[in-house]
Length: 281
Image (cartoon, rainbow, N blue to C red; front, side, top):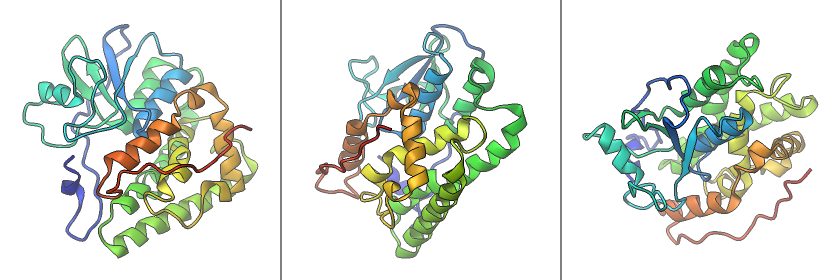
C-alpha cells in the first residue's frame, strides 16, 4: 500500500500530501459523489457533516469495503471495482496511496479533491449552514484548534503507530497524551470545544471513537484509555448520541480495517475481541 514511502530516514511517519486540492463547486444534485469508509476517521468527518447539514440529496456517497488489499480500497459491486481506477483516470501518473475521502465529479469524470481537511469546510461554508459548524466569529479559533488537534492527536496517533524508531514513537505518544490532557481540562465544564457544536468537534470525535478500540493497543497509545478521562468520555458519548455521529460510527468495520489491513503492525491479522464499551449516555 506504498506506506513505506511515508517513513522518513529517521523512522518517522510523514503523511503524503493530498494530490487533488481543487475546491468543490456549488451543489448540483447528482454531480458530486464522495467515496468514503466508515473505518477511516478522515472520511467519517465528511459523512458526519453530510448528515448534520442534511446534504444527502445533494452529495451522493459510496462506501468502500473496509478490508483493503494491495490494490487499495475496493468498491463493493461497483464500476469501477477499485478506487485506484478513479485516481488513475484523473492522473494516469499517480503513484501515491489511494485515499478516502475523495470527491468524484460525475460530469467531468475526475477527482476534484482528496484534501480531507478542506472538504468539510467547503460543505460547511458553501453547501449548508444549519447547523453552522464554521461560524465566522469563531473561524480563527476553530482553525487554531483544528491545527492543534491534527498535530497533537488526529495524525499523532498514526505517527506513533507507524513509527519505526523508539524516539519517534515516544515523541508522538507524548503529543497524543499532552493533547488529551489539555482537552480533558477544556471539556470539564463545556459540552463542546466552543460554545456551540463546530467542525472541531467533528474532527476530535472521529479520533476518540477509535481510541480505545484501535489506537490504545494497535498504535501503542497505551498510557491511558479514553474511558480514563471522565470529561472526554462523557463528551464522546454526548456526540455519539447525535444521529449523524452514531449512524456513521461502525466499530466492527473500524476494528477489521486496522487490524486486518495493517499487517506491518499486526502480522497475524487477528481482530481482538473487545473492548466492551457502553457508548450510551
